[in-house]
Length: 56
Image 1: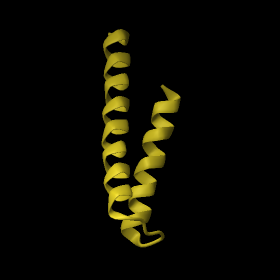
Image 2: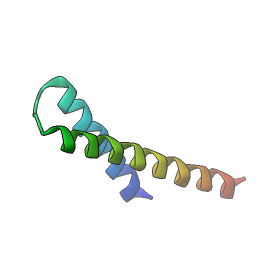
Image 3: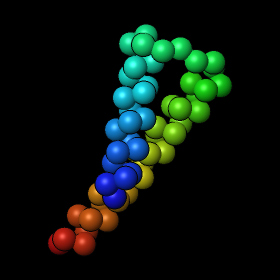
Image 4: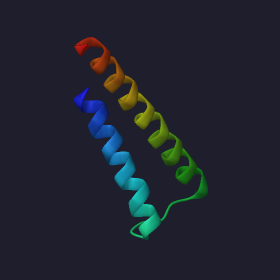
């Protein structure tokens, strides 16, 4: 689970760095990174939900 949280945080940081103008990429890479960020956030949310259900 820790790895999924780290992947999620790194992808969010990369997207914000792009929007702040720290780096530029081609249009295709921008789309890929954005969708990877969404997938990683979804995975982290699913793992958090499983952990909460198991602790009840």
